[in-house]
Image (cartoon, rainbow, N blue to C red; front, side):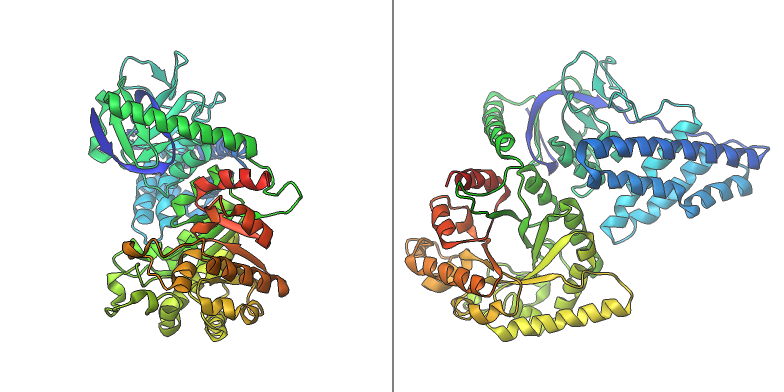
Length: 559
């Protein structure tokens, strides 16, 4: 057995025979031409043909996966029609008297290098787009077959034996595709009936190709780098799109374990088929919004795969924890925008920075504290270091035009903290208005109820915000005075304590008195032994890990 570690970008386990796709040959000969105008006309005709192909591809993707997934190919069409792109190609033809193929490839390399060097992940992703659309134009110029095949296959040939042509198995078998890389248009045209999963040497979790793989429900792993080996063609492999592990020629124990996990996943999928699209409501008609918790943009795939109705908690601090320096406004905007776009109309509740206590970041330079759980953390950092807070708020506001974003403030203990946070938010809004930058003027603001103080002040807090979300992990620790990071206190830190449940009841009642909704985003939300209790208390929303969504919906629908 050979074990390879890549980056899991689309969850699921696939077991099957490997088929290696050879990289397409995009060699272009430089030729001197006599009639630059005729060559420019040739380029324009090829570009128009490529635009028409992308329109067909866009319509195919929209029909199968929805309009929001087709927007990628709208963007690619606009890129081809961009005057700067066309102007550079035609300028090169006119000035250097070179053939159109060479001009297109040269401009594509220049644009791709420019995009790849940018700080914004959105702009970096455009490097793959410009290469993809340019390859399409070059294929037309070179007389190659339209890669937008009507049978849903992709271009490319297997390395060995010719057993795979156009990216699909000719003998009717399904395979795991190994490739150096796959362009977004190639991924969108995969025949899902004949492809079990994807493994690529290049790529990232946020690439268009990864997003499309998640949309298509294909387990996928990127970034295996030098471990990519064309001689794996024909060997049996197991890939785990969650962990990023690839096992080529797996031993019996590994194969058995992966088959067991795959069977569990298929059972979960059966539940999904049964409950997908069904309302989360009790037999008596009590409606509950069932959302999911995430920590990073790549988690959205699991949210959608498990049919959550929204995101009830995006832990934005992970954008800080996974870096060695301050995340810029642009970096954060890209992350929030990506999540909002992928979720479409579904709500996305983003918790503002919750650093401190058990989540420490070196570059914050926080002082040592004997009891950090009661220390300088979350909203306290944001209000005393507004220059940090405002960067995040600006990014959130800018992203709010791309979806249904709401802002949630953690660790609130007083009305004044909410008012201070709202004042900084208004400053950020004023700045963006002055810059003529669009944002959702009526973006909703909520608070996490996770301290006894916020429960006691719930009536006053409800008058200031649009919703409550109860963080039961911290609420349990503060109510019972038990540090949840101390294992020896586990027997005393009972989240089922009547005191904790009374706190939850008081919060729900206060919210409803003031006409706002109240949810739970802590671990108790997924505790099926308490679901009936929460329903009786009148909870409006539960936000849980993505894999807990369907079992919870099942219990609620049988209540």
